[in-house]
Amino acid sequence: MRRLLSGALALLLVGGLGCRTRQKPGPVPPAPTSVSLVAVGDILMHEDVKTAASQDLGGFPALWADLVPLFQGADLAFGNLETPVAPTMGRPGVPFQFNAPATLPAALRASGFTVLATANNHAFDQGAKGVRETLQRLRAERLVALGSGEDRAQAEATQILERQGIRVAFLGFTDLFNLDLNQRATEPWVRPLDLEPALQAVREARGRAEVVVVSLHWGNEYQHLPTKRQRDLTRALVGAGCDLILGHHPHVLQPVEVVEAEGRKALVAYSLGNFISNQDRMYRADHFPVAGGDNRDGAALQVRFERRPEGVVLAEARVEPLWTENNWGSGAPRRELRVIRVAAAEAHARAELDRLTDPLAGPKIHPEAKALTRAILATQERLRTLILRRRRVAETIGESFVRAQ
Image 1 (cartoon, rainbow, N blue to C red):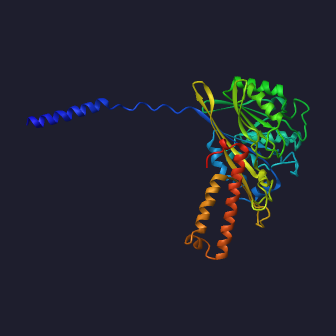
Image 2: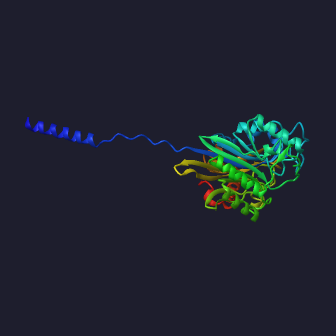
Image 3: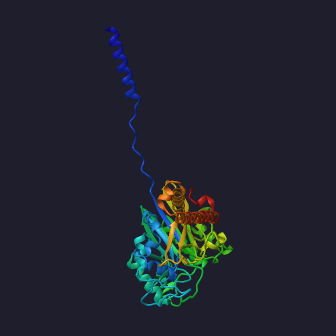
């Protein structure tokens, strides 16, 4: 009996000691407040882009369906609208003078876009009335326009959007005009990139918001490196208080960099390339040098600003390569253009090639030997194209910003 009591006492002591050392988990600290932004480049309304949308039951959103989850999942989604939307007041688009159908703004909004740069060299393609109609149509879809207005005051107004309790200021400028119709301050206006007024606008925005984003239409077409003017403007704008510069116009990608000036740091995307276009439509990876497809490369810049004790800071920045597939010259009954996410498409192509080359699975997919061979060759070419384009984007943008594959 004494031995049994001793054993019971030992168990009680062990149990008691265990209870004393076991601690209740503390409350889980709340996740830091943050705001996310996705940015892409030039939304170009070449005739074949409009034709492809008109021939697809899904309309424009079908042309970039792969990107819709990315846009809709972000707090803010930005693109450069390099076209008027003036079907009533304007004329049909012609080469180098664009116009978009009335369906485009609703399609952009439904896809998840929230902010559009409208200060660019094509802003006046349909005249001053075209600027006014474009803005009215964008407002009707609750899309924020940057850098153009029905008068000068509206064009130069800083747009402040609040997401997740963080105020984000947007400003838009163009350094280039095909046609400059800025005349009277009471008439439609497109904001030029004049340095001192731009710096003052950034300083004022810095006092009103926690994040300052500047959209710039600048640089030289088809050049992968920023000009001295771009770099000089960047340092001045960063020193004045901007946190993020979103560049467009060259129609090819340029580097993404962290730039420091006046004790401040900002992220700069000198050019996000084309988002969608009909450029380089003849490019085939097996027949052209890799540079022959540069106008079809794109980038989805994904950034996240986070509130910390020291303030709102850039917490994350990465780039996802994009590519516009184009069936020009294929003999297909309809025009097809698709903006795709390269990493996902590459993974799918690898899996498809594995199935086609499997001794058992391949013949089940294509029982006829010639058809199987054609499918294997086509998949191999697509895979080579995607690998080349992914590498090209990483080399141009900067390896450190391209999301690990």
